[in-house]
Length: 94
Picture 1 (cartoon, rainbow, N blue to C red):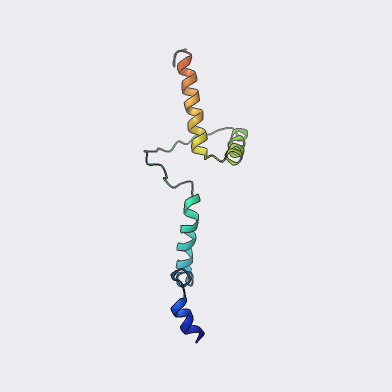
Picture 2: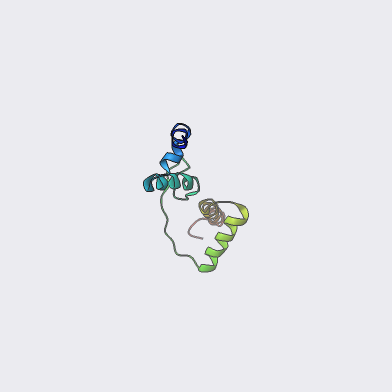
């Protein structure tokens, strides 16, 4: 009787989580909204690999937590401010 009820009333998710691959798929879906590698913005992006001082990385991590922003938002804002500052001083040759 229990098996018959479980078969009729069991959810698709419960059936899927019964196997290893099913659990993996569910875990991936659950983590996906928080995965920083996902492209959530429609504009074209490129990867920028840079080395920064460890203390700057710590400041970036702290700012992300405190202000609830992504690293991308903070870094893009910093680059925009740096470019504006350079252009205000007469461009690259100043």
